Amino acid sequence: MNQIATQQARAWYVQRISAMVLALCVLVHIGVIMYAVRGGLSGSEILERTRGSLAFALFYGVFVLACAAHVPVGLANIAQEWLGWHPHTAQILSLLAALLILAMGWCAVYGVILP
Image (cartoon, rainbow, N blue to C red; front, side):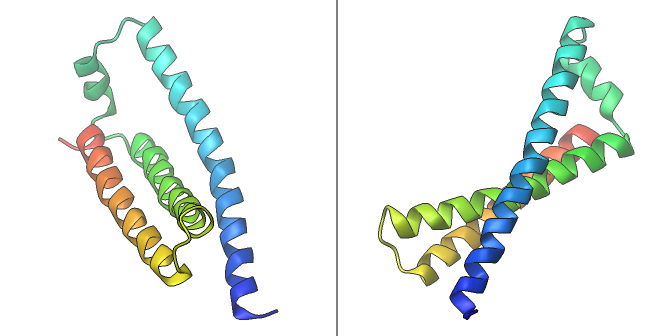
């Protein structure tokens, strides 16, 4: 198997596995929102409950990592297939997207979990 085919297969697996993780994370996230809203909690009350929670930090950390793995693969494919970008340029775009998602995601986790 040549190097390009190996990279494509790896990207395919990353995309599919991260999609499974994201699906589960989205369902749990929506369930938590529904539970909190039905309980009549305000935004500040929710943040009070999430402060210092290792469980919330781990869950949303996994959510961020799954997003950072999933989105860039799709963006690289779109850039190559639809926009006709060179694969190297598309890979640079996907790396930048992953770094941006990680930075913004960790800031959000920090804001929800830590004081």
